[in-house]
Image (tube, rainbow, N blue to C red; front, side, top):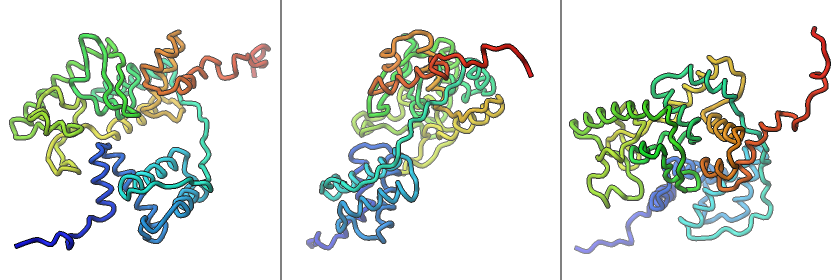
Length: 331
């Protein structure tokens, strides 16, 4: 009995988007963001299929984001990338020039930076794994997700260094492992290994591997070296494969703890986990380290991004002393 393939239903558009994203090995967070923006684009135009739309409709949606929803420049750019991905990789069509596009204004915000004393105060208000992770953000200049996604094999105790795999811009880089953190990290990994052994005994112990490595290296997903340095406290279902396994901790795990620690420290700054990374760059430059070295450690594509940390060296007023500080007197 022959099967008429012409009668097979074509996958829904958003399912095609998800499949294409996974084929290209984009992260799950990127997948969720792109699908969300494409859905919003379609709903904005009353569920009209993208095949029947063009640059005019794309312009209208992006201009709406900038003028009505007042989104940031980076948010508008992400929406544009999602729509370009849809047309180029799913629909097989290139968009033309978006000549009437209104760009969201890009603010030039100076980074929020802790003083060294403020770093100490915040760390003193953290404990356990929270304290260890925050020390890596500050002591190694890691981004939050870089810290969360660390694998055992990427920590080199012999050379006191950490290898960041597939960081921002899909680049690898090497940064230092602080000696003061090394001992505590070893103790932490001993506990993680005990948990991993229990998972293996219970029939679990597998971990997500990128770029189909799980098929290429059979059993690698259960090996110790591929496990996350900061695993989740519970086993969950992988949203893509449906497999039950232990993933890394959620980013909110540290984000909330740091926010709470900043408040308890009495520091009145709009600080977050990323403030530790900003402080890392600023304090290294204060200590006289070469800007190019700091750029490499932070993984910045352009040195101009690193140069923003020199704002602290100007002491807030381009090195000028306020006249009120030159007179004597008290209230």
